[in-house]
Image (tube, rainbow, N blue to C red; front, side, top):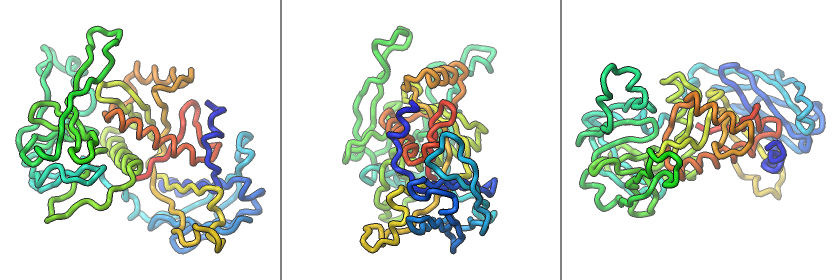
Length: 400
């Protein structure tokens, strides 16, 4: 794996990570941009940080309330493996009012006795009209059914029973909502039976299970499942929920990968805060682990600027002349391992997580799991070579 890392790098010119809780930061400058620490000067601007190099000056816009402390940037040893990078430490000041700035996930925003419309995230088609829920209730977390025997002194009263919503209920899972069908979705949703799991599994007690997939009639995007004849299971990565106000529609659809990234990041942060856990096992609907995530920092502010963009703003012939300044944004720092990884150390970690039930399960459709892994790999490829790995994990930042 170590030999693959340089190929994934996109020529990082300047990388910045600020830690709000620590009120400090790390600045990394590639030696193709500056040869020695003396070639780099960092100054504070109006809600920005300026990095001057022989290539030109780079202006990084900072979030409101975050400022660089003038004169605090000092060189720091980068280590033997970082011969092509210059590392600097710096200090920042953070106003307390900026502590909570991440947007809440759809799971957190739904309220009883308010009207909502559900839209397909891919094509913004209105799927469900003016739904008003009398009750919005959380489902038991994760693998609750698997530990019922540990709490009951009699046979499991929930065996082979599903928790289903009533007509005006909305049940909240970790990554999905359950709600009853109504007449508004007859023309907007389609259903199709699909096998889940492997028929040739060595465990004969777990036969191939079939799901009834629910898709958008307009663009055919899979939105979730029909877990019962009159019950819909919609994943938060597939739908957008807006208050039902007149003919209001969601704004133009976000870039798909950015929507998945922000939606999952916001939900992981909420789960970490509510469950006091930082290990997550992203699983497909058949319960098979796809991706292991370890949330390290939730207070990071990051920016990564390719080498080709450093100094480009000062060139009149550059197409980037009128482009906005690079912006440092809040992000989660995570370690991750794809469960399909064939490396020996990675396989040992995956096995350890499975045996010890380390990760809190987060269920997503297989295609979304693949999209999320691509988001992680794309983030990893923008990092300086010294930051690609931590022990046997890969490193990524998920924007909030």
